[in-house]
Length: 237
Image (tube, rainbow, N blue to C red; front, top):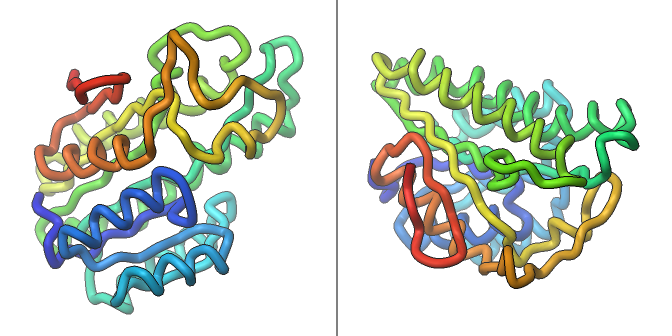
């Protein structure tokens, strides 16, 4: 799907990958719905992207997620693309993972995207199709001590995404997963709990958010099931 003139909903749009993708999509002629908790940042971004709609949304709250989809559909008359990008890390050893922290991160990384997908699917089906891109993590494809709880939430998102892709294929709804590696964003300063060195290292060099944004756009353009974002040229699976 080409996104020119398409209505694109982006969660976690107030910074990082979400903001970078919103700017990229706007440059491609998309009509944007920008969702995040930090309304001041959303409003500033919307001012840069004329015609976009900024909505304060906590993706942990199911009713706010449902209202996001309702409001976007009412405002633009349709939703063509959903980019589930909002997420948070939980970087502590398995022995020290608290259920409270894990539940909070599951709500944001899994439940929110699931509800958003469930809400947009009937709309996309009725209009003849659409595209959904769920932003996962490269950690879900490896065993990385200290990151197991976070990676587990992304593994759950991967499974839901790829199963939905198979279930909705006949409806023209294409679900894709993008796997970023270490990205130069606020992510490591906003962890739910724990800590890990941000900014990359020799093994996992950081790349700019705009690099991941290009991978998301590629997933929409091509409809590939999975796009892996290594340090270097974008590779696919």
